[in-house]
Amino acid sequence: VLAITVLIIAITGLQEVSERRRELGILVAMGARYSYIAGLYLAKMLALSLVAASTGFIIGSKLAVSLTGPLLAVNTRPVTIVWGHLPGVAALACGVALVSMLVPMIQLVRLDPNRTIAEE
Image (cartoon, rainbow, N blue to C red; front, side):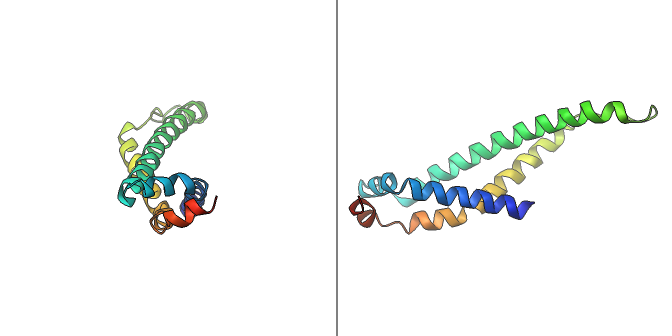
């Protein structure tokens, strides 16, 4: 599941870089450094991964509590949300996002602004 997630995020990142080639070429031609542009993409991906991880954790935990609680026997501990796991989930999501964005960042750094602007 983790490998498929990395692959899907990488493909989405490659698609976004290829769709925004003209804007990226203009930014580079205007003097923006590749590190600045890559930082923008990484910040966007980290923000999205944090929101997605937090939302998934909250929804999944609430569903687990509501669906498994009534099914358990009487003499068990109550099912609760373990909020201490949220930082680990968020860190894992950010790590997966960073690994997934390596290939799109390589494509971004190899972008030639002159060729990109001349294409259209």
